[in-house]
Length: 310
Image (tube, rainbow, N blue to C red; front, side, top):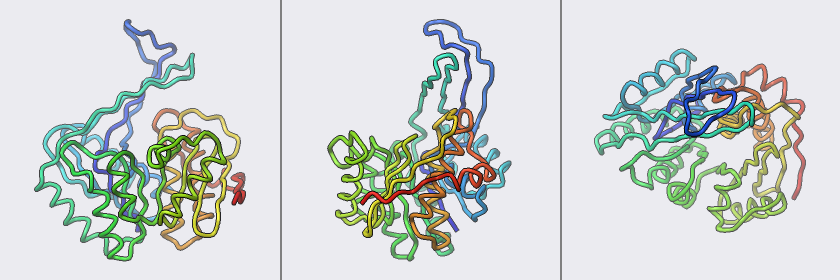
């Protein structure tokens, strides 16, 4: 089973306008709502790929109910702890004439200590049935920066593979705890390493350095350029197939889902890189915050190239 923890979920609303007019009234032609947050998207894609998964996290208010019902509609199992306040409503405005996206992200509700304890009890129980734990995304206000790190250590004690996909201080502390795999994007890897990664050779060197620091597997996502994967054996570059990209929202989460599915079934990380790259490309083909389908993922899979680069 793949267990995902999204401490700060959201509902993502995407508005499609012909041309965004600042300081004026804009009428949108279409809108969509999707349950979101990195780990939730991982569970959604893992479910589409046919692997058992359960999503955990905190939800609040009417927006939290929307997220829960949407996951029920997709058939994605979940155990959320409800908290006072409102789950984030993140809004993205797509300007179709300029092919640009402008996003507005909220902070999320505060989480009290008793709700943290409830979540902890749930995770400790379900980790016994887990093969992979995905810790992903930002933390709500008042939640300690060490939350991800604590669950990395707990999963290790249970023999569960851990994937960490976060940013900032929570990511740094989580990395120090020694997860099995980390999946930063280029900008997150730059912040972690404290230097720019201007081109692919620099990303390769950065991935090697992170492995040398003690992370068994490192995957750095590069958007349309694919992803760099490093472990103790070498470095690989996954190159996605040529597609018409409509939105990159959720592509990195879909990549993580492919990695998680492969690791859960005992496949080599390179096969996970291949599956994840196909899943990320399938999601990039969809508008707004939608995710790709399993049919799209497996249609793209033979067209993913994975080249050894070190």
